[in-house]
Length: 304
Ligand SMILES: NC(=O)c1ccc[n+]([C@@H]2O[C@H](COP(=O)([O-])OP(=O)(O)OC[C@H]3O[C@@H](n4cnc5c(N)ncnc54)[C@H](OP(=O)(O)O)[C@@H]3O)[C@@H](O)[C@H]2O)c1
Image (cartoon, rainbow, N blue to C red; front, side, top):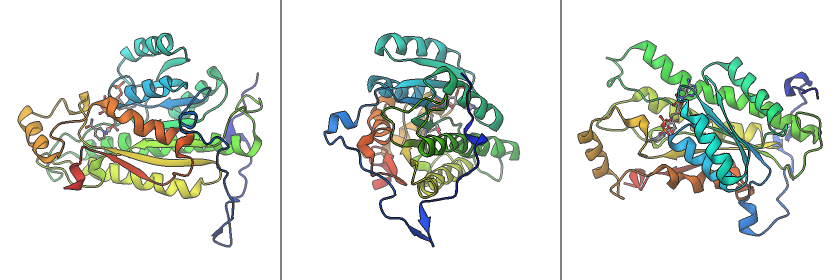
């Protein structure tokens, strides 16, 4: 079967607006009204970047529990291959791991189309979750090369993933066909979710990380903007976790983490599995009228 790439089609005009005003009934509500079926991802295909461990792996597990076939993306962590095999066995869904460099647009595109070919030709959900921390303290003392790497990994990559996923969702909406030319069953709209951070809302102390904070604020606003651009064929939202116990903060000394806990009303870091519900909500039809929003999951940090 020949895989048709979405970008081989001529770009249709934006039909969501006329004369600067949104057309009425641009979208449709799901016919399902019961809450548990609305949360189901049965038969859907999801890609989650940065998901060999940490938050991404918890998201993959949550999606698999809800019935989705899921592609794990990893960069250096080859344990992702074992995690994929375990998830397939445990949840009876398809789950494979793909090595990807999210800072390389061509690689992102290649891997997304490879997954479309190897899964069932469709894409329903994309979670842009890969990210790295800023580790060089005050920006005036940090290296520009570190700035470029943080912004490339934490912000540019989200744009790249969104660009390719958006092309596919527009194609699926316009044609009603999968990427392999079959009629799509049980398909509604694409759902794009990016992992922002509470650091996109506030400036953390005592560790200083301006570049990371700025990149994460950019991620949040990118999703808000995509929600408007994509309204006919996909929803776009972000999640802003607070401090979550994962490897990303291994470089932070224990005494700094103790200071963090004193700033969190709930008095502790979150566990990755405590984010599963928020991602599942945004991925599924349970959130069919939710687009352009950001869900903060931070144990109350930003409420103070
Ligand atoms: N933990 C927190 O407190 C917290 C709070 C707010 C937001 N976040 C955000 O949550 C997301 C997940 O972080 P985490 O806490 O789960 O930490 P993590 O386990 O270190 O996850 C980061 C992931 O990003 C991947 N990655 C890094 N550079 C990459 C590249 N060039 N190409 C492809 N993948 C790359 C890593 O892949 P490999 O391991 O395979 O190299 C890893 O899976 C990040 O965006 C982070 O900024 C975390």
